[in-house]
Amino acid sequence: MPKQRLTSPTPFMVAEIDGNIGWMIFNTPDKHNAVKVEMWEAIPQILDQFEADDSVKVVVLKGSGEKAFISGADISEFEQVRADIALAVVPGLRGVATCELRRRHQSLASRRPS
Image (cartoon, rainbow, N blue to C red; front, side, top):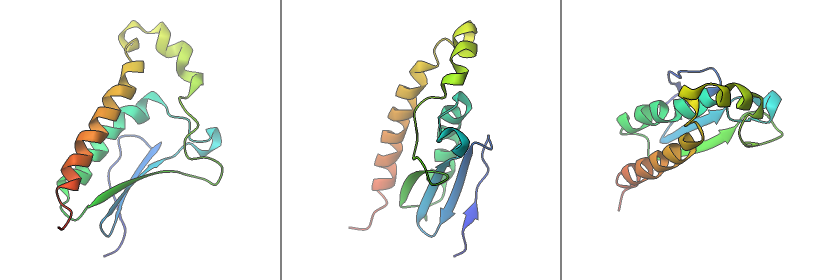
């Protein structure tokens, strides 16, 4: 089965299916894959696509480029994010994304052959 590129809500996240593997690729190599707010927000949408495909048995997170997996949050966004009261809850997105990854892991784990 050829590698399949999925729809991503941001160019900073790449989603692919290669055989039984879902690849979620953090794509800001010029910033050592620092995670932007829009990247955090894209995680559940990408996971939805993996979960909808019964062939996906595992999801692998990867950073693009050769220097870093993920360097952390993109601090260049801090001033903007903190200035916008509507986005003041952004630090909570990390916890939401983490909980979402755990929930999806349980869903994918149930697909493993015994």
